[in-house]
Length: 198
Image (tube, rainbow, N blue to C red; front, side):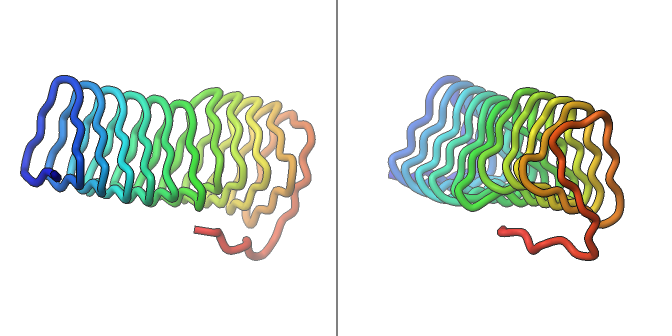
């Protein structure tokens, strides 16, 4: 049995044995949806779990974990803990702890917090990787790697790397590269960056 409507407001837990299509969702605790999920605006205190695809037109705010079985399409995504999806397409992504995608995350802006971890490629116009965080492959217009963070491969128009950053693979840039005191980096200026995977 799915849910269709305008506003859903629940203090604790909302379990939907089917799909859910609403304008606005406000839940204090946990939301679990067995089918697909479609909304304009979502605010969840704890955890949002959707077995299929999820689409949030405006803003998706979750205090803890967002776990999507399929693809996530959204305006702004903010998660205090983690974001997991097959792929994520958004205007902005800001996650405190961990982002894990199988196919990648594509957004205008992407931020991972201090000591965060990103699994899967990131494609964004602006990417900010917090202190002591790690990321795999980044395709960015402008990339900021903060102190002691690490990346596997970086492909950026402009890259700013703070002190103690590590790039284990290659760093290709088109316009500008600024480095503070660094270790283990192999950078090269190129005319054109490789095509991103998502």
